[in-house]
Length: 494
Image 1 (tube, rainbow, N blue to C red):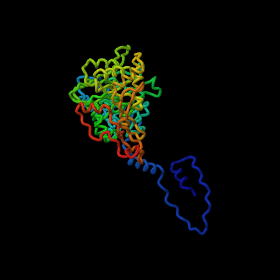
Image 2 (image 1 turned 45 degrees about the horizontal axis):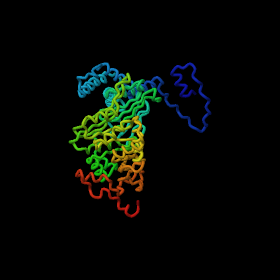
Image 3 (image 1 turned 90 degrees about the vertical axis):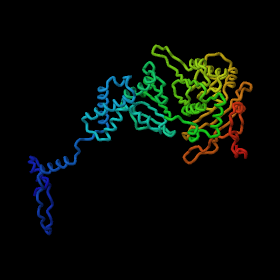
Image 4 (image 1 turned 30 degrees about the horizontal axis):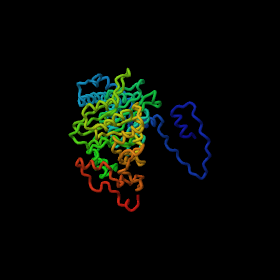
């Protein structure tokens, strides 16, 4: 008696069908069971299976991730071939260029032989449009208002800062060449260059966001790009109060300091918000004053009308044509400024800025990198020495004590928030030291909440600064109780 496998093999006409194993005889008492009808031959089974597969199978397989990348590359190449040099046509406005790219890109995608779903088609068009007109894979991060900083560590690793925390994003570049194209697109828009002879560059985006790029051979793991985003709408005092950076009393005090033409230094580490605070303080300058801003890359977003923006320039390919911050500070003194705002002092221009503050240009503002108000004074001393002038240390300290009135210290706390941790008055000299006195300090004794966020805020120390008399001379009214310490301070909690 042949088994079902043998019958199917015979139906196929196999020449060497395996013999069926011997079966044990059924018990005599068991009734004989009639054999079921033989199933249809295998060709019929295969035919029905193939027909069913054809009935349920999609018309064409959807492209995988690599397939979409190949489709995207073909679409980008075809778009560049259709547009050609019109991308750099100066007669086309930004709106006309975007309309041209949308029209040509639609035609390219329609001609693509690979079948795409509606979502894939829209995604493809958006990514190709970003590659042509925007910053490629970074464009959606730039459009995300929750992202405050973008850090590209090579084509395969892109970190972002959101709500004060660093996370690895899912954004990737297809190659090192694509990343280099994005970097070159950024720097060429602001008249800078980056190549093997000049592998580092500071630049900016159209909205003022700060950009730093480093390419090989200096960047060993691939081109590195860092973008510190600025808000589309400049932050105002109320925003900083809402964020907890400062208190309403401190905001009124700083506003009075700016209006009274005090010289203010904003101090802090990297990423603490110095430029943002400098921008907010600059908004307190009266509209009838002439303001000169001096920066490495234009970042300040002043709202006044009478503003002259100066930007330094690196050397060209021949090593000539460099214009430093110090050159611009010296030149600004001949431009009849009411206020001089230096984005950051980091070299010999510090001496020129201090001299300007001491020679009638009151109300100047600047920033410096340091960890405390006392460190800010020490750093100013070091920067003055970098000017190459053989000045005695006491003379430098006298210049600082006479020029600087207020040091505002910003810190980035471990919970990711940026707070003003000290507002310090520079009182003068005692012997060989510059004397300083805190007016506001951050209250760390309040502790943290369950999420690790600091509960404290800047509080007054109870010291009335000596320059408060200048407020009265300028007719500036300070709310009562601005310099009063908290009630618990009177109970010995300090």
